Length: 246
Image 1: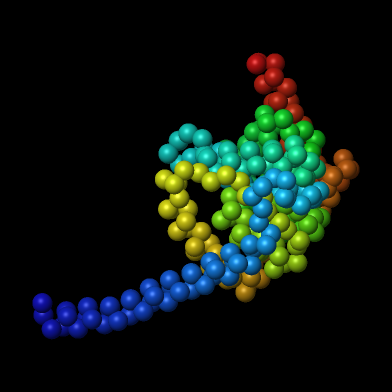
Image 2: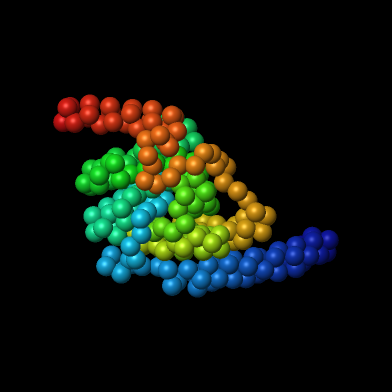
């Protein structure tokens, strides 16, 4: 190897290795701070979950990347259903991404919860929960909730509770079941960076993509936006048609 190439390689290593080491330290510190701060508010046993008016269900796709059902979605629906049936929450606020006409996380969650016996009148949809931050902030600022129970997998709950508590929200979390290990590595890696981004968002005061008009819970008919009334009406019609077909 030529001397010039050896020198360039040596300088590259001197820059890259310390940079990677610093990145690992930052990610580990962010992870530990969020995990330790959220720990007192995590609940895995149904009977131990404090009673709240509202359960905030964090959205995800109902389909896995490779096709078939998404176990993260299925476990969240099972946890939310169990929490509601046990009377630990009275309403379920379903917050997820509806960025396109063909992709609608809250609607899929609603269908699954109704199939699990949850009363449709106790379900409220938030179509602008594009990120965890959006879902948590909108639960407070749009839906008027100062305290609620977050429902997702533990890793997600820890981050959501940390955000909520930092923003003055009295949030606790009910941990949904975890998917098989083969789903874990990619999600684990992504979560490490998501936890670091929490501090960037808080530092720069990042706000949700959309806020909009206030919708109290439980929402009186006159407080529901016209667009949401039309959405609910259309969903009711689809549900009735599906029942007749079955």
